[in-house]
Image 1 (spheres, rainbow, N blue to C red):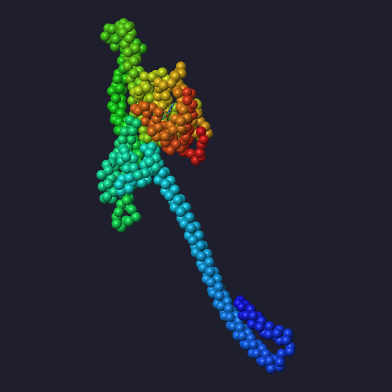
Image 2: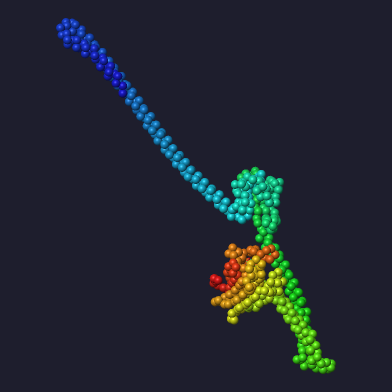
Length: 508
Ligand SMILES: Nc1ncnc2c1ncn2[C@@H]1O[C@H](COP(=O)(O)OP(=O)(O)O)[C@@H](O)[C@H]1O
Ligand SMILES: [Mg+2]
């Protein structure tokens, strides 16, 4: 507030006070002069009053002006405060919106990460080699299978040209360029490659990648898939081989049948010769008499020349050949899946015989193997496929023989295969053990897998036990297991339901 007008009025009063002071000091002035003085005093006072009034009015005016200004200022201030409030509120709102946006952005980013991880896991779970390339053939994606096959890490593969990254790929740069350019998927099946001196087979598929701009048809590269189909090809070959074997089986059955007739004649005639040269038959003596021949001399001559012994040899060999032929006929004639009541001890005898006569490489050494069978007297027949079970026994016996006659272990004094059979509840159990080299755990864990073999090429296919496993578990609802320790032989145990079916699970 301005106080200056009050100051001015104090100054203005000063001469009045001086004048009144002078008047008080000198009371002896004349009356005229007194009047004059009073007049001028009055004038001064009046002047002063006017000045004061003017000053007061000015003061009042300025007060009013001040007030108005203050009011204006206040209203401006209020307006400003309102504006600030509004601004703050809108800023708050904006801030909240921003925070929500950040939050949802974070969620989306996390979801994106999740999706990326999920996709990566999916792609990496595929056992095939999956590689993404751009339009120039440079690697943009490289899965774990690709890393495992090549040893090239994701980081190193990224940006490398596919021909450099996968040098064995049977594909030229131009070919890849053409595929990407024309958007034509490319498939090449069963490509053969030699790896570690063994053939492996691959299916190669290339799918051109369509970029975001689908409409413009712009391609941004391709996905290359390299699938290892070695096992499938091996299986197909095995099936072809199987087919060959079964036609060979039929051929063998035909031959066996044809051999049976002349063999029968040989045996029959040998038997006849034995009978007709025997002194024990009256008719022989009678015929000799009629011809004036001394039968004693004749018998002496035959014995001297060992003729009966030769005849016995012919008979024994003929019978043996007959047994082999009838085994062959039985094996090739029996329907594989047809089930009947089967007496396993007979099947085992046949399998032993079959293995001994099959002409396997280890045949020569097989003579040294002692085979002991031991079946409980009440061993029952089971409802099963004789041909399939025989296949299992043949596989197990052959494995035992091969293990026993292999060169790479110290043989025990006596090579032995023991086969025993007994009943357990409504099942039968057959155990086939050998005192061969046995197996290490890392072998034992895989022996029932298809194509698992520790034998050299030509000796093992790795299918014997997997087929046996399938026959026992799938076709006969039974169980097959192995117990073995390295250096301590192996025992295979088969458990089968007598009735050929079961309603409960079993542990062996
Ligand atoms: N009695 C056994 N003693 C030692 N090892 C065995 C025996 N039987 C099987 N094996 C092992 O199991 C593997 C798989 O056997 P199998 O499936 O019959 O295939 P293959 O005989 O063609 O190798 C064999 O390679 C061998 O290592
Ligand atoms: Mg085998």
